[in-house]
Amino acid sequence: MGSVVYCQQCGGETEQQERDGRLRPVCTRCGRVTWFDPRLAVAVVIERHNSVLLGKRGPGVRAPGLWGLPAGFVERGEVVEAAAVREVREETGLDVAVGAIQDVVSYEGESVVLLVFAATEVAGEPAPGDDLVEIGWFSLDSLPPLAFVHDRSIIEAHLGANREPAED
Image 1: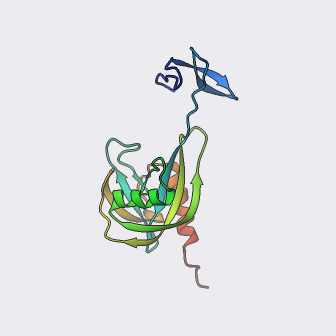
Image 2 (image 1 turned 135 degrees about the horizontal axis):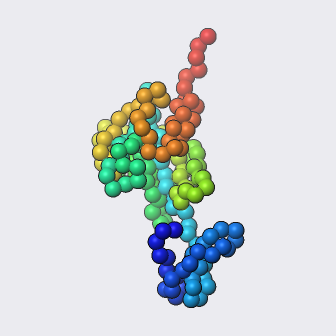
Image 3 (image 1 turned 90 degrees about the horizontal axis):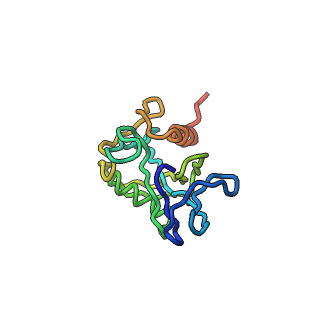
């Protein structure tokens, strides 16, 4: 952690100490460990004609200028499916319904756990909103520079699972 973390119990400064096999902020005054919970986010794969809808990320967000799936953070107390629907509406103007969780993306050192959904119904015409400056439909063969390493594998898994089998 690059910034100072203050104890949630007494307000004292913390220092990095090994606890449970990891470096964690520990209060120098009262000894309380500060536990950092992961952030929960959702992403939605919206497919049309073997292409997916991606948004170009605007300034002031992680990975600006790169493209990604409609996604965002789940708010405290919000049902994850409702968060997915809300994020799509905020970023693309589309109304969607989502099915079951398609994937969970989590890896060492990343503070965000991502739940991936597929849109099962889509209504409206897409237009960029919220953190996006542009949106477009992309096939697997024409993907733009992606914001996150996991986006390509999510898209490949989705499009691969939904491809029509080749006729002999």
